Image 1 (cartoon, one colour):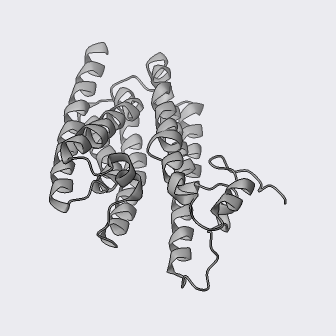
Image 2: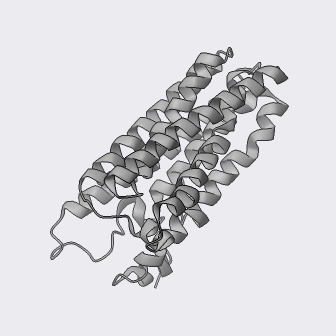
Amino acid sequence: MTSSVLVVVLVSALTVALVMAATALWARREGRVVVVDAAWGGGFVVVALVCALVGDAPVRWLLLLLVGVWGLRLARHTLQRLLATDEEDPRYAELLDGQPFSVAVKKVFVTQGVAMWFVSLPVQVAAVSDTRWTWAVVLGVVVWAVGLFFETVGDAQLAAYKRQPKESRPKVMDQGLWRYTRHPNYFGDASVWWGLWLVGLGAGWTGLATVLSPVAMTYFLIFATGAKLLEKTMMRREGYPEYAERTSMFFPLPPKRG
């Protein structure tokens, strides 16, 4: 089994490298680093597909289905957002601050490529392990479904808010799931990968050893390229600091009174 894990890990690394290289060329042509967001979800689907083809564990097809539903929805959503404007995302504009594209390759594409490979380790390992159909698989699908719900519904609610005329809509989106967390989509993203890790937990100690993968995904979504970075610009908007005072940043909680 050790040799099988090594093979799928190396093949997955090569796959991620090719995905990020193609994305970097796309970004260079578009003149915007933000296109990497559209490749994020789709890249995981490609990795899961490669793992399913290389692996031999029955659970690999379940993992491909779960990653596929999540990743293709996310890719479609981010691509629609990308096509709606020709401007750079404020997060990447602030991160790069006018630096040359070679810096973007190192800071964004290489970093996100390594992150994609590392976060997908539970899928890679489970695809070639003697994964058993245990309670962890069922629990993992439930957690995945909760995450997909938060991400899908949160994105839909935000899109509906943005379609309202600016003059008549509230200054801050604080309805629906956004009343309980300032980032339901990021919380949903993290939950999806905790669910996938639980599904792979049926592989025994090898599955357990990949726990740092969902930990890393959660860290990225909160502190690295997600919530914390986004809120640097959001806090400048009228009404957002007050919204932040009463609403949990990540984990859904009842809003504070007052």
